[in-house]
Image (tube, rainbow, N blue to C red; front, side, top):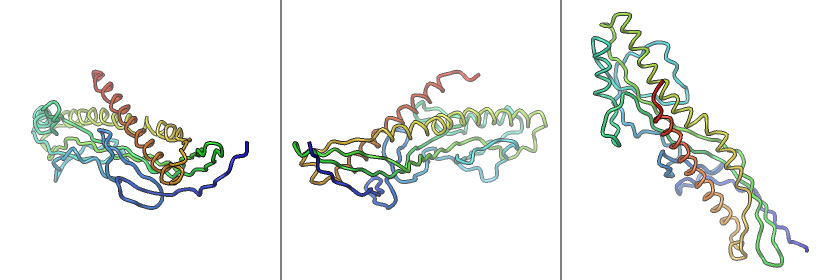
Length: 243
């Protein structure tokens, strides 16, 4: 059966939460899976900034993470830890303070193109879709205690404080690996699975917009699914007692 062929030029659109931009589609999701603004930082922590803090040397900070610090005080290691426990960020879910915390968003930009072929018998249109130029994006914030003055600590207590802070940092970096490092391949795979759409004759009358709506809806669903997956992994990690 002969089939008519319609070629459609690649679409290059960028629309996030109703705002059009050129270069591709961008979608960002907060930690609840809600579609949010372009490039919006993870700022739900609302930390108090330490104006003059002392961070021990040798802490390995990630360049792709935004770090915030809240001030802690004390003349001994025990006093400093107590200050962190009393002044750390508030976890509203459990109505308790934490000595460290994190917040995050994920997202991506991509482009897509498609070709369309009509079934002359039914009038339906078969659309083959290719999503390409996918760039995963992340915004992760970590808040940690920072000592305003360590001059009163002896060398042993300074080392204790450094080890304490390193243990907090290692746990928060484990969260980052779950959020960011473990999801990049999954994002590429899932977006690559959006490959086909069948349009009715009525839908084909507005083909470009119909395909755009479909691609946007499918990738938005993928974003929500990936957020759920990340949240489950984070919960499982946090349920395990620290070694």
